[in-house]
Length: 124
Ligand SMILES: [Ca+2]
Image (cartoon, rainbow, N blue to C red; front, side, top):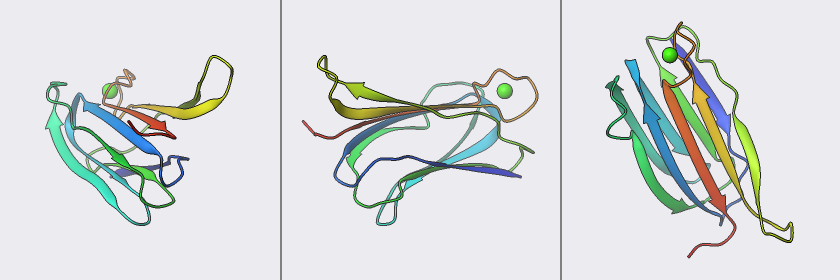
């Protein structure tokens, strides 16, 4: 039974989009929430990447945005999140991008869960 919690350093008022896929024999539950709102919690059990587990967008309502990955049949969820600034051509930071690719068993392909989050300071 394994759970990982990833803190997403995005302030309230930012506009975020997310895209989450799985290719896993185990049931995978992914939840995105902050102190004020739960954006989604969804479960999928399929080795087929289609359809995506989650795909949507929202304005961040509160603080402590976090992505929680729960895989009850896994003994350890492995992987390291990556984050980069979204920069204008002048070098100003206008947002951030987060990528998390996870391994839930032994084959080390790190494709069992893939999470992409883009956060912009401005919507529309
Ligand atoms: Ca794997």
